Length: 126
Image (cartoon, rainbow, N blue to C red; front, top):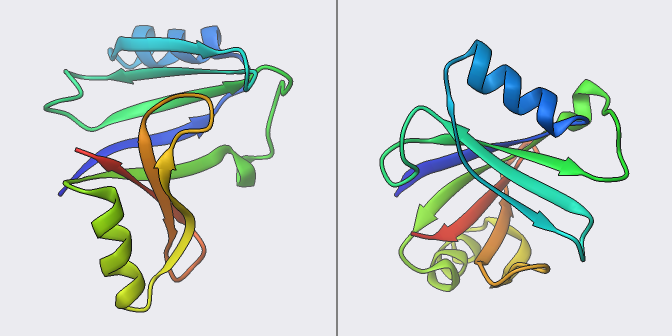
């Protein structure tokens, strides 16, 4: 397993990309619009996603700002098999809060589990 990305919700995607790339020296690795869900994802980091943990900047088109407490989204962990990982977690008493399956506005297979404090952790096929 390895840590893949941390997601932050942002009110102005271009401003956030500029901050992380121009001020912090990251690279814009990829960006994709999801018109059906009215959001855009942009991934920034210091190297390729195959080798580095990155930030996922999520811009919900109808939201200009967030309270700081709701800005944090989740961490993501790569696993060999999302379905098997959820079974192991559930069997060990863990809480699966989003069953394994394709992303609602895409094809990526994912699941979400919740840690003891209620923080969500996304599981993605590595």
